[in-house]
Amino acid sequence: MKLAEQTILVTGATGAIGQAICCALAADGANVVVHYGRNRDAAEALVMMLDGRGWAVSADLSNPVGPQELWDQAIAAAGTLTGLVNNAGIRSEVAVDAPMDEWQQVWAREMRVNFLSAVDLSKLAIQHFRANGGGRIVNMASRAGQRGYTSSAMAYGASKAALINLTKSIAQSHGHESVTSVALAPGWVRTEMAEAYIAEHGDAAALAGIPIARMADPQEIGEITAFVFRPSQASLNGAVLDVNGGSYMR
Image 1 (cartoon, one colour):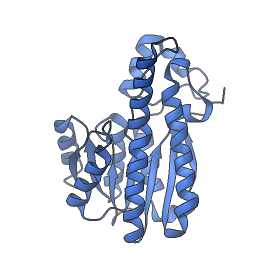
Image 2 (image 1 turned 180 degrees about the vertical axis):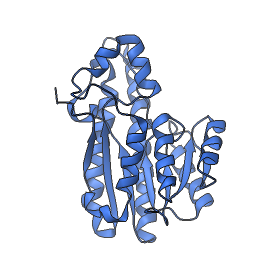
Image 3 (image 1 turned 30 degrees about the vertical axis):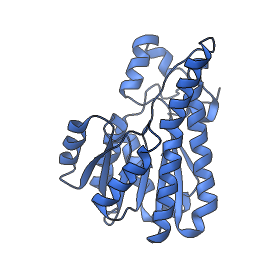
């Protein structure tokens, strides 16, 4: 059990990727704080799947007070945390020709959920880890954050690029305090978001540019996340791990 003394908070835990991460962490011995927004039943069912190795806590990360509320609940439940996975995210679309108020609303919500909530949680985690012997932050970025994205979803790509920079900044600034960070940058993963895109644009559009001609499974993301939390992988600090089937930059 390589993660046997770790307790890790996972945001957005009830989605396909979040569930896979929680299951992989628990399978390697970690206790998991399962964050959910509204789907309490799914969160509680996930905790049961983890054989009780965790707690379900709720917070609205689209609200500026949500990260602090989530962190306080996580500490109240678990006592001490050794890891944070900033996995919660949304992908919205807005045309550049949309009215300015609509444009600003989409960008503001996307950055709040995908990036600023991770910023706030990372601040709290850094302070907590420094006082408790160290810890690791894993940020769920995206291939879109490295190569840009479609016009209507630029907010998503920008938020993921910001997460990568946040990861590297934490790694450089706090590694000497035993606070380390890693970003994962998946391409398409078989999730509801991917299926919705395929329903609109077709399977070929989603697979274009992926040399292995298949999307990643959520379990792949879960397994690599658990690997990153192994104490033996301290030198991964600041790394961005691509999980995209060999997609080229374009």
